[in-house]
Structures are given as C-alpha cells and as structure tokens.
Image (tube, rainbow, N blue to C red):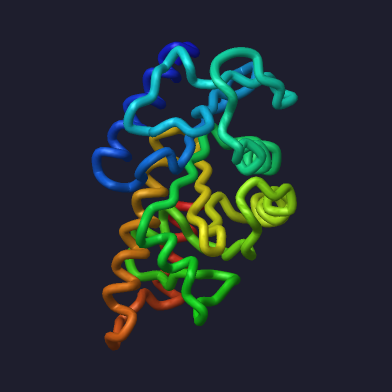
Length: 210
C-alpha cells in the first residue's frame, strides 16, 4: 500500500471504531508502520473525524516529518514496533469493557482474561496487565517495552488496551476481540462458567499461533 492508502485506511478504521462506540471524544490512537517511519493519529484528534492529510508522519527515529503533533502516547506505539519487528500497526483504545476489567482488583496481572472463546485465544492469547502510570509517563513505555517482546497485546491498568498486529486489519480485529471478551467476562463474572481447558487452549495455540 502507498502512504496515501495507509492514511485513508486509518481514517476508515477510525470512523468505524468511533461509530461503534469503541472510542469517544479524542481518546484512542492508531499507528501504521511505513518503510521510512510511521503514521500516527494526532494528539487531541477524534478518531471519528480524522483528516488524512493531518495524520502525523514520523521518521524511523520518531521525529515528526509532517502533519499535526502526534499522539502524546507515541512512545507506547514505538515500544511495540521496536520490540516486535513484525508489527505493521498498533491500536490503543480506552474501550469501556476493557478499561473496566483493567480496574478490577482481583484479576491475574500475568493473564487478565480467561480463555472464554477460541477466537480470543487465537487473536490475543495471553494478556498481561501493565501497572498504572499517569498518561504520558515514560515509565509506562518502559513497562510496555518489557512485556512487548512476549505479548502483542497488553492491558494498561485503569487505562486501556494496546494491541499490535501484522497489519492494521489484524490489529483492529484483535482489539475488537479483546473488547468483546472483556464484555463477556464482566457479564459472566458472578456466574459459574465453563472456560476452555488448558488442553483446548494448547491445540488452538499450536494451530493458530505457530
């Protein structure tokens, strides 16, 4: 895809995410890897109303080349790209159910959500919780970087998910799967639930995550 096609794809995805209530106001940000750097949604921009010409372009050192000032969470995206060379895009949202789960006191920080569905295992696998840091804190980038080499998706405590994918489509699908699984988890939290067994999870991992 050309750079302009990537810009248009970011706009389409942003509009879709916003229209379906997965983000709101100016929250959330999207990035895509280019041959010579990255495209990132600007700071204080609504994903529902992006201008492709104003999307930020950064070089491979993180310097702004064109467009508006980038999201203040640029460092989260770059941490994912640098630790996962096969990453083609990163999506970070403040989606309601995922954020709600990130605020619970009794979740497992090593793997926040249980294996409720096969598609969650296939698209997310395991989901560690990154300890809380204020937005923009560089220690947050360090914490994400420490987990990124082993996990393409992480959940920021009291904040929201950061999900990397081989393409923008893959990153979005995984983010949506995470949000729906978080919703299911909250719905089932006080119910006796049949999760996938470790054996079933292993089969899925061997087949779809090799």
